[in-house]
Structure formats: structure tokens, C-alpha cells
Amino acid sequence: MLVAVACGGDAPASNNDVQNVDNTTANTPVPTSQTTTETEGVLATVNGKPITKAVFDRAFVRIAGNSDASDTSALAVQVLNTLIEQEVIAQAAANLNIAVSDADVDAEINALKSSVVGSDTTWENWLAINQYSEDELREALRESILTNRVRDHVIAQLGESVDQVHARHILVASEEEAQDIMTRLAGGEDFATLAGDLSLDVTHRDFGGDLGWFMREELLDVTLADEAFRLEPGEIAGPVSTRIGYHVIQTLEKGARPVEPERMPFLVENVFNRWLENQLLDATIERFQ
Image 1 (cartoon, rainbow, N blue to C red):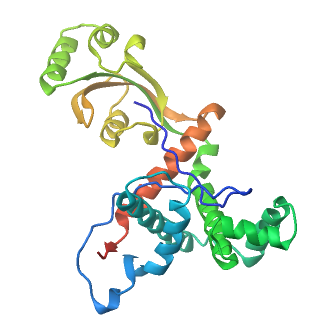
Image 2 (cartoon, rainbow, N blue to C red):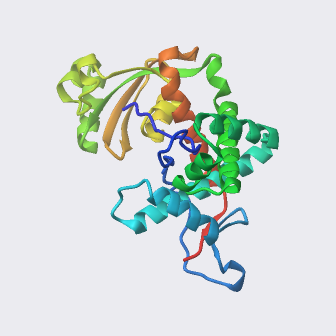
Image 3 (cartoon, one colour):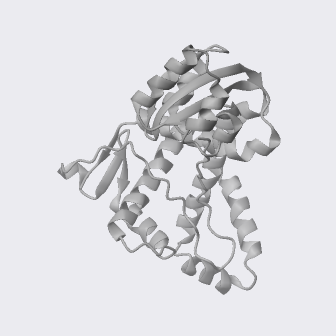
């Protein structure tokens, strides 16, 4: 039930390989077939800020050059989603007074150049291989630095004690099964025994359904996480419907706790991606076909 969501940066490769690009898919934008004079050459807007076809075309060429995707339509959707996410992050950065200076970008350019062995021609070849003009590369590096700074701001809470819950659950296929488990628990049967016998969660059923301590962002389903945090220690709730089935969940303990170092990389991505999902939900995003 605990999942990590990868969200890679958009910085170019530091060798002669074509860069890898984060293809995280945004679910927020609402497609529209409306086309007007104002939106000619514009594929989408984010809170009124346009994403132009020219910018999309250059990004698509770079990403397609390093992709084995056979469905170019699906790849085009992914590229546009990535551009939308970048714009959402940029607007959030402005609201947070987070900025990237020309000097910051210069430092990244110089570091990158120093890793490309050879003459200026080699540098030009590297740009050509990665399908960048130098201006485009500067913009890509600026976006990468900005994303990292926003991410650092969002995950700053993980350096301190954060609210967590220790809970266990039983996952079944139907609401009727979950309701039957609730009845059996009310009759005095043991939660851990029922989890071991009945739960479809093969990862945790051998431990009596114990999920351990977790932050809200660590659970696969927000509904189940909200329920775990709502309950007081000892309380049981169910059936809780999620996309994978029906749960009976019991909160065992709750409180503010530090995050263990080994969990930190996992949580960094989850916390940032949950934040990004919320930003996308709050944004006004239009697509023009």
C-alpha cells in the first residue's frame, strides 16, 4: 500500500547522450476543441499563460529522440503535460518568491561545459546531439534549478518531526466482505488473525495487516490515508472504498515523529508530487486542439 512516485528533474545529460525527460502525466487539464484567433499557435494555457506550439515542437523533438514510444499521440500528450507542469511550478515559484539568477544559470552552463571534453566545436556538437540551442539550454537549466528550489521548499518539513500514523488494515474485494469483517471484529475476533487469513494485501497480511508508521503522503490512496489520520488510536473504520478494493482499517498510534533517513528519498518524491498534484488541481488549465 505504500508507494513512491518518481519525479525526475529536467536537466540535460552531462555527456553525449540525449537527455532524459520526466514524463509525469498531469490529470488536471480539461481538453477542449475550441479554437479562436487568440489561441492560434497556442496549445494550452496555465492560468492564462500560453504554452506555444513552437515551444512544444522543440520539446517534442528532444524527447522523441530519446524515446522508443511507438504511439506518438500518447508521447505528445506526455510532452504537453510536462510543459504544463513546468509552468505550474514556475508560477508557484513566483508566488513563493523563489527565483533563479543569470549567475546561477551561468554556473550550471560552465559546469556542464567543463564536463564536455574538447574544443568549442565539441560543445556545439553536444548541443546538436541534445537538440538544444544555447538559449534553449539556458532555459532548461533555469527550469531545472527552479524546480529543485521549489522542491526543497516543499519538503523542508521533512527535516523536522512530522505528523504520522501507525495503522493496520485488511483488504478485501467486496463491501460485503469488509462489512462481515467489521461484524466479526465487533464480536471479539482478533484483527491480526483476520488480516492473515483474509487480506488480499500480500505485502502486509503476514504481519497482521500492519502498515507501520507513515505520513499522509505515503499511502497509495488519499481516502484511506485521510481515514487513518481521522481515527483515534484503537478505533476501527470500514468499509473504506478505494480503487483496489474495500478496507477495514485500525489506527494504533499517532503523533509527530522524525523521518528516518532511509525513508527520506521515498518521501521527498511523494511529498513533492502530492504538492504538484494539488497545484494542478488549483490551476486553471485549458487545452486547445
